[in-house]
Amino acid sequence: MSRTPQNGESSKSKRDDDSHRTKILVLGWRKAGKTSCIKTVFQGVPTKEVPYFGVTQKIEKINYDSIVPIQIWDTPSNFELDQLEVPINTFSTIVYVLDMQQDDSYHESILRFVHLMIRIHLINSSIKFHMFIHKSEVLSEDYRGENYAEIQRTTSEEIEDFPFKSLQQQQQGGIGIDLEDQQNINLIINNLISDVRYSMTSVHDVTLRDAWSRVLQGSMEMLPAVESLLLDFTSHSSADNTFLFDINSGVILATDNRHRTDDLSEQVTEYLSSFLAFRDLYKNIRKAKSPSNGDANHEADKAEDTNPDGEENTEDDEEDEEDEDDGPRGWWDDEDPDEPWMTQSTRLMPNTTLALWQFTPYLALVVLLRTETWQARRGTIEYNLTFLRQGVREILSVV
Image (cartoon, rainbow, N blue to C red; front, side, top):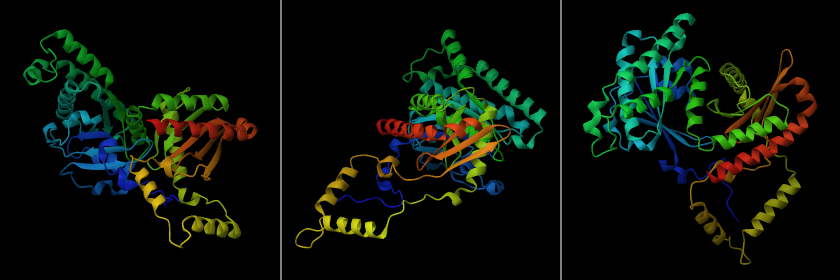
């Protein structure tokens, strides 16, 4: 008789190895807000505690489990690449945090970002770069827009003006790129300028979660497959838009990308954040089980676990435990597919409805559609949801 894991433990002891985690390196100037960017989203730290965060003194690793397990490395301001205990190739993404209100140190901070970015790009051109232009709430809307554009423009100019030839000696015996060739330099410049993703962020609104959405989506190998499933679900359900959220962080993991805008993503994220403030009222409802059936099932289970001599069987348990050691387990290994999850719908004026379903222990599906469609097709939508959920499970099981 196999042992049923309790409270979603998912054999966590077998997942302590970090090799399966997608790693994200967070860099930035002193007091730029690196730690607050991480902790307020992925550790649930209230924003009111942000002013009391100390200066990061050493590298801190934050593990987070969602549709993909990730590990975020928070670094001190004096961090250098040679301080890493793992190769830079270990990371999928670099996030650089820049304090928007410190306009007197823009240039120095941007120079540092450009220098690090180019060195990393020459080692591995597939690593993605994001800049969080942070603490945007302190500036007026007009001044905020001007600074945001100025930072992007300055970063592009510094990439173009960077003395690439000074790195030629460092590359010898390494990547082997000829940095004396202007065509190679132009190609690198064009790639970097086009690949850097800029996000204006604040811990006090949904912009930070929206920025992390772009980071996590860029790290998901299965993203195209999940997006295709969402698009198919949206079409068959006569909905307008579908969003797959990570529940604990409030980060969008995938969308159907139909007529989607940043404003719409922010509105839906704000809705989810507001609703999840009351999530404790929507505890998982356990399936009702009659005492007679429950006792009978308990006695049957007990009988199966006992041999004719009255001793408990242990051989099957040992075999099952050996099977569990074969590799890392996912939430779907211990999940009851018939478990009832929380669901909720909200009508927005004049004729729009937002519907939410807890999709898995970690995920929530939010659907935006016309109210008349929701009233007429709710049964069909929830029927389609069954197939969407199964499709996501199948994708995750083979990734």
